[in-house]
Amino acid sequence: RARIRANHSATHLAHAALRNRLGKHVSQKGSLVEADYFRFDFSHHAPLTRDDIEAVESEVNAVIRQNAEAQIKEMAPEAAIKAGAMALFGEKYGDVVRVLRLGNSVAEANAPYSVELCGGTHVARTGDIALFVITSEGGVSAGVRRIEAMTGEAALNFLKSRVAVAREIADQFKAPIADAPARVAALVE
Figure 1 (cartoon, one colour):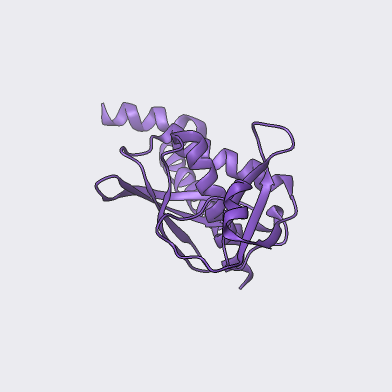
Figure 2 (cartoon, rainbow, N blue to C red; figure 1 turned 90 degrees about the vertical axis):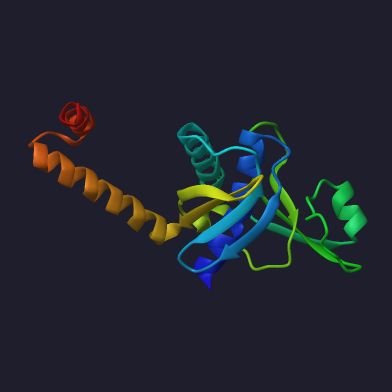
């Protein structure tokens, strides 16, 4: 359950980071949250570049390191939206909604990082997420992209597996890991 909370909270941070990086046209089109990973579908017209992915990862991890307390308030939907909460288009909301505030803005003082309507389970502090890494990105349909990502120990294990591959390649060349890309390029050439 703790891993699901971390991944669910990370979807909100990823949404905010994607909007900051790609533009305000980005909006959630779907998500799946599991204990070991999550996927997040969003509106966007082009694949993410490696720089986009790294920028989103860096921003989300910066908010995680804030270790800011998650704040949840209940209010009327109109009041929540007026207060800046993002609502999913087409969703039906009751007379009272839960508003989730996660982290502090990386761009402006005294502003929240993410404010969304959400009735799900979440971390107590952003630091409970521990680590965030995007493991894949691709198209789902016209105008809809999907990222898959991991948090916490699953993210750490994913990164360790990538380091192991780099070490194995470097060992084959009997070279330091830092020299492996140049050695591979020379071999390909």
